[in-house]
Image (cartoon, rainbow, N blue to C red; front, side, top):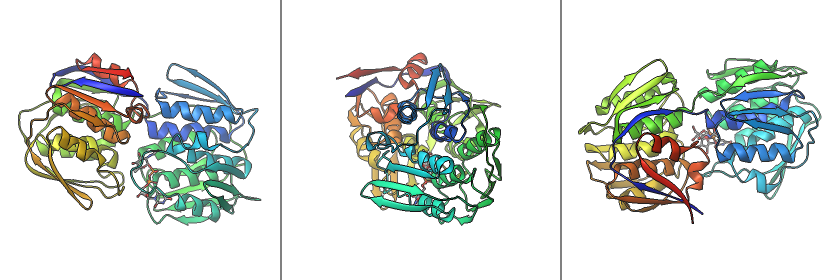
Length: 417
Ligand code: UD1
């Protein structure tokens, strides 16, 4: 088991460079099997979710070459065999193999995906989408078999603008016969990045980034080169950390438009930001104004930034509220923030935070990926030593987090116990 130890209350200055987006990467890797030719993807983050997807590729006999931050995927000798539970349960995004395998071979057999326990996380919208394209879904316990004689275009309305369902249906539809229209599609930048990748391979997708995506099926996809966009959630996390402990901390390789909602909320609190074309510079101020947030689909306030943002709310004067609307179980970080001294109560889907409080180091748990990021932000802010257990969750999504923070003056280390 790995733990993280942080000696907090140190000033952070220098530059943190943002890596490629986890949530784009985890869809791009399965998407690459839709061709029989080589796909080269650069700016791939070195996180354990990337490793887990490469393990699945290798289990399917796909050739994978990894060099620093880039990956070459060659599915020439691929075999469409069942994806075992030991692979699928490692991460949520293993479900993208369902759409990709269905799109390419008209059959996918795999187990229910794993991932953070932040809610029930059903995949009914993905499966309904596949059925609309002509597939039948059979499930035996945890195993799902999705197959079709032929895939045909369809008009699909998503009851919820789900990121996963939007991408998965896109993957299944790119090689279907005819036109698929996804209405109430999710608009997250990662979806645009995946659509661009598929279009570079010869797909015909328009409207990604809006709530109506049109996909005209093609017979063949070819080799391509692609770059992953910067990770807006990683960027947002470090910007929040900068507001807590920074002294002219520069967060580099950022697309500010992707984190508009966060930047506006930070400005509302009184955080001083210098926003450049591809960077943000942020310093800690002595006083912040209490501010409410409510999570929403893009371009709303990202649910993945809600947990780290709570830490900043503990430093604001007065009563702040955070309302979570996407996931029903995303307040597990709160009890650990209380261990550090925060004054927070949770009722239904709203947390009320009274501040400012001086946080003091304690032993805490990273209950999920972004709760873990919140623990790191809190540990860096708190006086004394914070020990975080279950840090495997954090390493699934933050590339070289210890090195990046150490480089800007944090005292943080990772230990195997
Ligand atoms: C993705 C992100 C995750 C982020 C989330 C919301 C990845 C790998 N993960 O997760 O970091 O927190 O978007 O921005 O990209 N739902 C259903 N049925 C379905 C699918 C979803 O009811 O078939 C519900 C979910 O329970 C949830 C909501 O829709 O309440 C949004 O989920 P969705 O956008 O699908 O999230 P993920 O793609 O799993």
